[in-house]
Image (cartoon, rainbow, N blue to C red):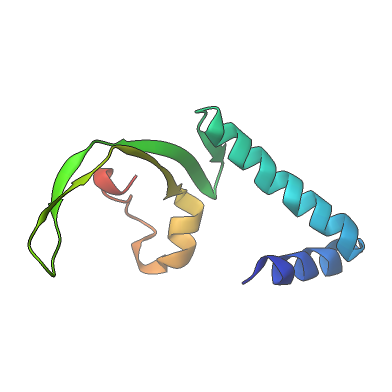
Length: 103
């Protein structure tokens, strides 16, 4: 689903104009991005949480030439699905909690 399709679906359900709905979706995404930029975790109960993970610098290898390449440290966004989302996508696992490493 694209952002435009999401706006269409929400606008149809809430009887809002597409322009109003697009503004709400844009604000929602902007708030998540600003929260992450500030280093705050974003938690949407039942859906999941967004947070930042820090990856340390490492030495990798170019697979074509075999030459070592320095990969600098970086910060990456990370999404962890909530229990409701996980259960919806994996109904056969509803009675079990996801493994500790998957959270």
